[in-house]
Length: 502
Image 1 (cartoon, rainbow, N blue to C red):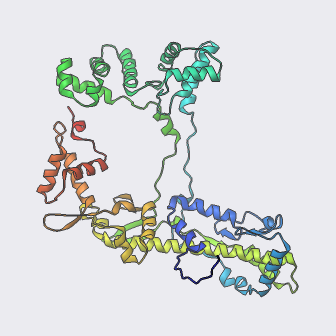
Image 2 (image 1 turned 90 degrees about the vertical axis):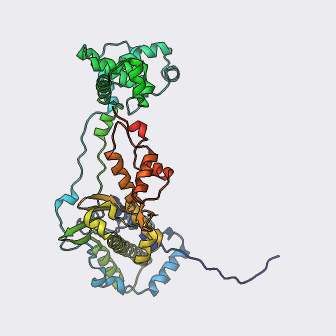
Image 3 (image 1 turned 180 degrees about the vertical axis):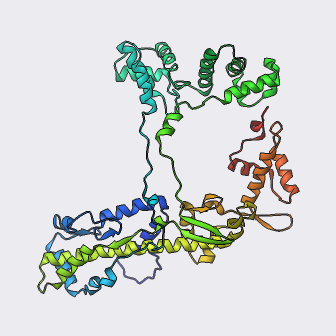
């Protein structure tokens, strides 16, 4: 049975403009240009002040198809009537004022407009790793069958230079894909031919084989090279002990002196564990970090500024303004003219919202970074990590009056350039740790002290986690051994046994 009743609900909904701002806020400077280009593509009413409009007729897309905007289609007579009545009642004077639709120049007039900001990063053109292997294959005199099999092997080698695919699987690939019947022994023989290609070590099935291929080629070239021969023996017969740095066992089993073992280890360290990486690294453009903020120390006074790329020169198209003025002057408007006016209004509104969102993005970023600069003033002034104060998102949210999620969006994807390096904002947030004296210190400070301990340790007798814990406690940091192990792993430092050197 149907019933009617009254109920109250408290809902919090974000407007499209707020959603747009949140999305823009989390975009780093490196990606902002691309986002602006996307908006320029979809909204012809928005123009970049640095470039001319791409289309002489801003309504080419409007006239070629029914008007569509915000998923609304003017297809039926009913929707057309609605549009007509809406446009009749609407005052378009706000859209015709020159002061309102004039250029929205967001860039600082005193900013540095050097060409450096607009320079693109050149990408070198060279052959890929697999193309190099195929070129070397083409220089050999082989039968068609052998050529096809080796080509299949090369195609199965990964970007690091390893053949991690099982030989039986390659046999199946050749049978089903190229109708070539072979076996693993033939594949093994032809694989040895691939392993003679450059770079040395290519085609190996594991790290041990990769290093041995390189050592054997080096030994054949040098002849009577004692340290290379010893290194080959170690890798061939005692690889596990070598990998785990059980040097005492190696000295005992192989009857080596400390100097012999040290020379052999140096030979292994010269080898390339990923022979294919030299090609892939040269082809990939480097990931340059573009700072969002710049902090300059002017005689002890810290000055904060936004990267100029965060202030694009955006404006509303003059063509759209002129077209609206022309249509609005008509005393009698046709259905097409009324739809055109609505189309113009929607596009100009979208352009205004986007420009306003860019402005709010700049203001929010500066507001957040200014609070962080004030909170960590001593660190940004000296660069000493021990001056870092414990700081969480809520601390900055309380100072700025922003929501924690907003501060998080700024911190997660933005970088700041200082006189002692460029850092991600997120790295300045850390939990607090209480010392024996009751003082709260940042966990990052503890990690810095821990890192200093390990850098100065005796490499022949590295400090264990327990010893590191005791050293920290002697300095007043009450911390558990498991926490020390966690911080060591976060610093990317292996356990003491793997840090040991001869």
